[in-house]
Length: 554
Ligand code: ARG
Image (tube, rainbow, N blue to C red; front, top):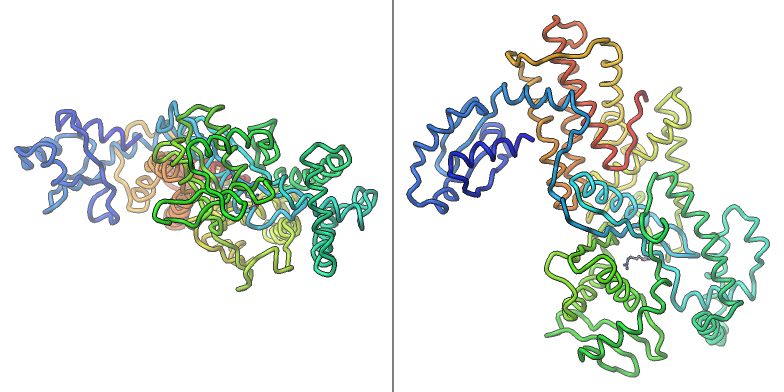
């Protein structure tokens, strides 16, 4: 694409040397630029004047200027139109090989069995899925994993509560089985405050579960099944899939028998220290608080299973595997500790472990938390989104309302750097005029409505157009699509793509409002139609990479 084209042409001028092509923030500094100091560091004897003379001869540029620090270039109409032509005609508008031959695990969602699928898990699902799509778009081999929390001492409490106060038939018949399980769990904690003996019973149930007692196992499996009814519904609504372990991901319990060898390895490498019966890893100069690997009753923890998970991944996918964990910012310290332990064990090289963190949702200034008791059920939020979207997408039916509602939620989650908190406000989410999912979908639908009325296939092969400002600005945005996709993918940052698409949509609407398309003279009609087709293609592909549908009408 355009950037590669320029790099290729330039490196001929510089005798094949490697240099960085910059993208200035303002149009007045060119479409692209090179740092003069960098050229001089490659070749101290370089004659900048003669370089510029040579660059002026390349027909990719309409002008080349030298400032004190940079050489700035502006793209010629010829190259802009050639690229526009390719995008409007071609099917494959991303031809990137940035990830060729590279393997990466993107682990996201990771809800817990018998617990609500929280808004935090929604963020992880949406952001993780978009990152996986981006990486796939630039050629990575992506493994989509889901680290479902289905193991740990809390299941002793869950089983104990279900045995004492629950009724399996009622849960079975309920359309909200997880809610009943959560109620039982809460009851356990209330009762245990009065009657501490219950904790002992719960421990005994967990011991039974670990040793394969059939009743403990049976109840636990039912909890898993009930939860998955809910998860499946949510993933279907969101259009999200996983590729590992038959589409469910490797859940925590999968690593039950894989922890022992890892604990042994940590012990052999002399990293495990005892403190009041528990076993922990301490860090050099107390960089982080110690990480507990075994409790004093010898039971394993979340961390033990994560270590076993990453060891398993190393063995299954090979030592070059890169692992992304999309998990909330509240687990930042934990992931630093985890990665440090793995570094001490010599399991990976720099850049192979990445914690992509997401901030919290705030509903009208209230912090969302499941512990505080004001649980927000995701199903309700998704249902409400569809209901509200139905009002704005008028008569297009339920499918479109769903696409708009879900698109609105996803866009809101993706448009900012993921580590930032997200304010949840229905009016902003569904605002057709603002930086929202529906605005993007609406702009796409606008392109399709123009195209369907045009009834011709545009031809712009001659390339001898004088471009209007609105046309030129828009084409300049269009030709950057691949560059943006690569940037967003390599930075694991869907918001980079959102920013681009939003600005593209604004630019298109400006073009649409200022210039006639279908009523233009024939030659101009071809140009403007090609621009409209290219915009539509990029908006659709971009939205799909973000996991958002682009209906033809809304
Ligand atoms: N189930 C966990 C939770 O809800 C998230 C798991 C994240 N992934 C991991 N490898 N620890 O908090």
